[in-house]
Length: 251
Image 1: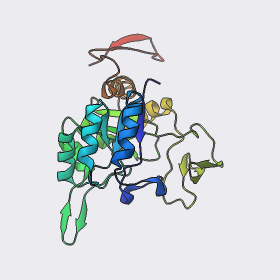
Image 2: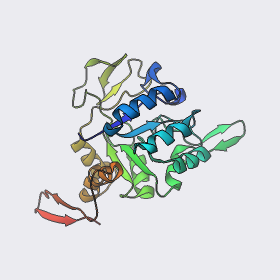
Image 3: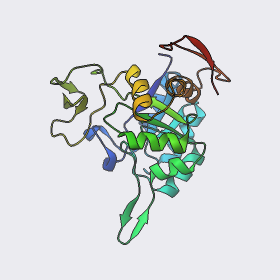
C-alpha cells in the first residue's frame, strides 16, 4: 500500500456515522504535526469543509501535496462549490454521511450530493456493497457521473469478509455483523462494510448494469488517477471473459 487515506477526525457531528465521539473541529497544531511528520505517507484526507478553519487546513494539505476529499460533512451546496475551489475534488462515499436536499423553515437547500453531480470535475466514491446504497442510487450515479468519475470503495474495516453473527470491537465502538454488513449495536447506523473488492465489481454489473470493463475501470483506473499513483492514459485491462479471453482497450 503506497499511501493512506485519512478519514477522520475533522467531521460534522451531524454526519458522524460510526465515528462516535472521536470527531472534532480542525486542530491546527494536530494536523500540522501529522502532515509535517507523516505527509509523505498521506495521499488524501477527508474532512468537513463547513467547519471553522477549513481554509487553513486545505492550505496546509495543498502545500504538502495531500489531496482533499469531502467526507462526513453537512455542508450546503454553496459551501461545496467553495470547497471545490479550495481543492476538495472528491466526495468520500457519496450518499453515506453526506448532506442532501433539506428544508429550513419553508425553504429548501441543496447539499453535497447535488453539488457532486453539478460539478463536472468532482470525483465520487461509491460503497457498492449492495447494502449502503440500493441499486437505484448506483444506477443514478452511473448515469449522471459516468464511468470516468466514480471510484468503487469497500469502506471495509478489519472485519471484511466475516460472516453474520460476529460481534467485534471497532475502536471505541462495538459492532455487530448482520445482514451482510457491519452495524452499531443499536442498529442506528452502519459501521463500515464487510465487502471485498471482487464483490464491488459483481454488484456494479448486477445492480447498476455497467459493463465488466467499466466496473473494473471504476475499481482500478479511476482510483489510481485520483490518487495520482500512475499514468492512466488509455490503459489496457486484461479481463477474464467466461466465454473468450480478450484484451480490451479502455475508452
